Image 1 (tube, one colour):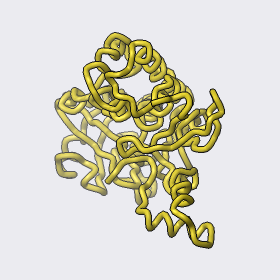
Image 2 (image 1 turned 90 degrees about the vertical axis):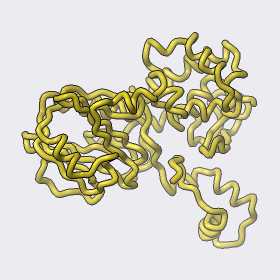
Image 3 (image 1 turned 180 degrees about the vertical axis):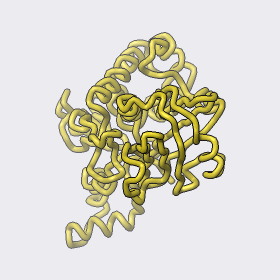
Length: 323
């Protein structure tokens, strides 16, 4: 299933929905307007958590002081959440181990356990972690529950069931495939420019490739490309060093703003991003181009356009980001 932020409709379904709203016959042009308007976004507001959202979850977990706490038992209600092993094996392996450290790599939550075991959690589209009493009533969308000796539990809720748990002795088998962290000191301009020059791909799909740079997704790529004045259909190797520098500056800038705002929550449904404490991210109000279709660009007042790049909904200012 496509993991794009907006649910995709067939043209027939789109026409039906639009006609129901307008109570009359509609032309193709009006349907096209519907498909690129904010009305379309209301169908499913959430997006896959990206670096700021995952880091916010990690920070929330660390505030709970879970380091040293022991997992005494686990429950699995949706077997597919556990990657590669059976629920019984997962429960047997994780029970009795204590948490040594909780960190992030790309979009993965990395929980280092005693005796050289690591739990990797990927939230995917709608995954979230809740901290509650072990004997509290189970939410029907909670698919994995880790029970601690304190009679508290870390409960994984996932409306769309795309999230995954990876229990491994060698986390680098998965994490080693990821690109550099865009907020690390190793993500230098020289390295970034060389990476761009070595590939001939459209810049937006390249930035979304987790093997190229870890942690970026649709929201922050749109924001960074707009900030840098680069059209998402540009070929990566065509970017000058000046353009690469602008993008290299923009990427950490938009990520740090997302972090400061505790992530981006779009809409109010159960599948949207919330921290472990159940708090909404505040960054949606400060997005300058993502899902601002039809609004005036804050730089030049040209209406923001929505296009599709690499099957992803993409938002640009056609004046500030010339192709």
